[in-house]
Amino acid sequence: MASVEMLMPKMGESIIEGTILTWLKKEGDSIEADESVLEVATDKVDTEVPATHGGILKKILAKEGQVVAVGSAIAIIETNVTVTKEEPTNSITPKEEVVQAAPALTSSLVTAAESEGVSQSDGRFYSPLVKSIAKEEGISSEELSRIPGSGAEGRVTKQDVMDYLATRSNGSYKKSGVAKSPPSISQPKVIPSITGGDELIEMDRLRKMIASRMVESKRISAHVTSFVEADMTNIVLWREKNKDAYRAKYGEGITFTPFFIDAVAKAIRDFPMINISVEGDHILKKKDINIGMAVALPSGNLIVPVIKNADQLNIVGISKKVNDLANRARNNKLTADDVTEGTYTVSNVGSFGNIMGTPIIPQPQVAILAIGAIVKKPAVVETPTGDVIAIRHKMFLSHTYDHRVVDGSLGGMFVRKVADYLEEFELETAL
Image 1 (cartoon, rainbow, N blue to C red):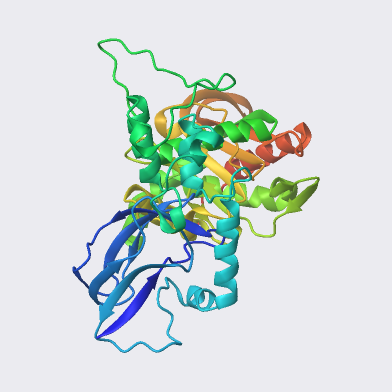
Image 2: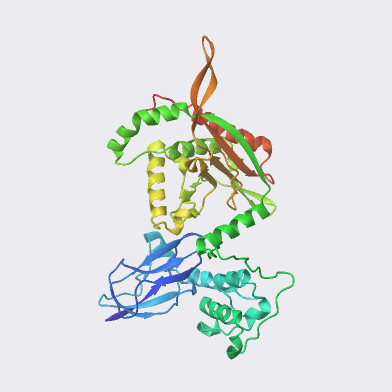
């Protein structure tokens, strides 16, 4: 029998660590290669991690709630397979195998992860998860420094903090030698006001993350919104005419979302200064056009998978990407790579029956487009014989942009161009 270390996989280009959410297997369990062994959370997405080898889960090295750097050992698998030193031991794609096999890179990732969590006041290591919980619960730096840690090298784990909070509330933490700190004057802990008929619901991890990012984006970017009404009649008629043939040919339906993304990608090519991010006093102009699309989850939360290089796809290609990402998002099957590297975002508020909205920009992007509901309206239509009033399918586009770097002229012209591409869609377009 050979023992193989299972490593924390690299789950995205910018991901350097992950939090162990749940072990799906326990020590001594028999596991098969590629069978899901644990759930890991990153700052992008939650995902299941498969076993790298079949055998027996001999030892679990990382506890639930522990933050682990990419490339670090999280478990030991006892297997009958002979493993050579050159063989990568925990990879998701061939490309990532090369990355994980490089000791220098792994070392730098671990160092970066560790240095990021070191407190400047007491020199102790605190993971981002622990620091986040401490901030939300109003635990001061001094108070945090006095919580005994049960993790490796005395590190404070999530469970240590949760145990402390549970005992702090009833004043019984004396047994650990930690005195209850007086309430902070500058940041008092908010005590919810509850009556007999109210229900206090704790936010889940994703909702807390969304809340934090939305507030941070409003603090960072100067939000301004421009509105344009687009005539969607040609697209509505084309889809109605071709949707059955499309399903018969490709085995899936086609929604309006691919048309929106196609128009946005074309408009970005015309106005590339929308496809940027702010880096201090510099503007980073992005080469790739990667469009995120907000997807509502069954939990009520939102997640934004990304269609990479959307400008290089036709309507059919975009539609396949949209359906695949939306289905995997709703079934919690997205990977970290699916939700990273977005350069512009589209949110379809019309799917909820809203005619327009003022969305918040996902950082570090500088703009986002809200798509309203398509509704029938009487409109003046120019014809060779004069103006007539006709029933048309209309829709509002709400373009929110960062006024620090996107002026009203650019923001307004861009959303007008998106509307033009939608209105100019040819009814004779081949399926």
